[in-house]
Length: 168
Image 1 (cartoon, rainbow, N blue to C red):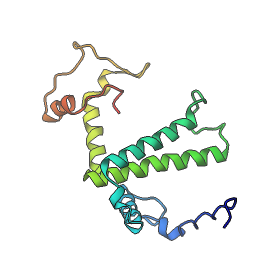
Image 2: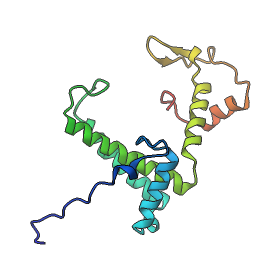
Image 3: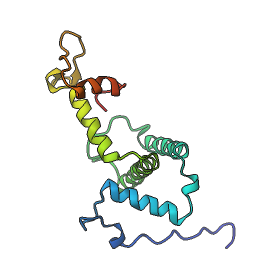
């Protein structure tokens, strides 16, 4: 092959290979984790998949995802004004972020499903509906309006979460 020719892209995986346990094309996080582990093992990439390397790759992919939105300003939900090719590219970059995150959690021994559910529970305690101003969707943070933590989960919510970014 000459320097001006490029190799053809590899064939897409067969539809059957992409189906999850439901057989409908959706995958669980556990299934994604297994697919990513097999993918890396088949290519002998495990030696490169240290937590640090995966994190740096994840950050790079988040940067690529950010570039898509960089000069678009605010966009409406569903991206109604976007071309199909732009949405396809967005899906690819979102997938890159998800796949690196799943792989990183696997390498670190973190059950991402359990961790995410726990985080939602902690955020529900840290940001109770009663303290949210529905009109402005902001958290009232004055000490007078904060409820007294009465459970171990509430205590954990205040110490285990160190961000104040709207519960994420």
